[in-house]
Amino acid sequence: MEQVGHNIKLARKRRKLTTIQVSERAGIDRTTLYQIEKGNASVSMAAYFNTLRVLGLQDDVLKLAADDVFGRKLQDLSLMSKKDL
Image (tube, rainbow, N blue to C red; front, top):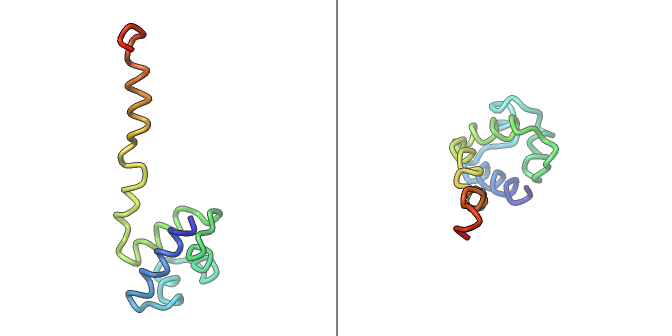
């Protein structure tokens, strides 16, 4: 989560937005934004999403667990009979 927070902070700075601007537009307190930028896992996903939306990065949320390669392999193994193995 620390890397996520760091990336959000960089995105905000690249857009030359202040913490006040982003927090107001996201509908969160500045202290919540600070926690997001630190990668605090106790902050709600809604707060993270609203912050990403303000930065124009809301589509990045769709990438989370989008392609579950490990899960598909487990499922494939369970679908195969013992004689197939």
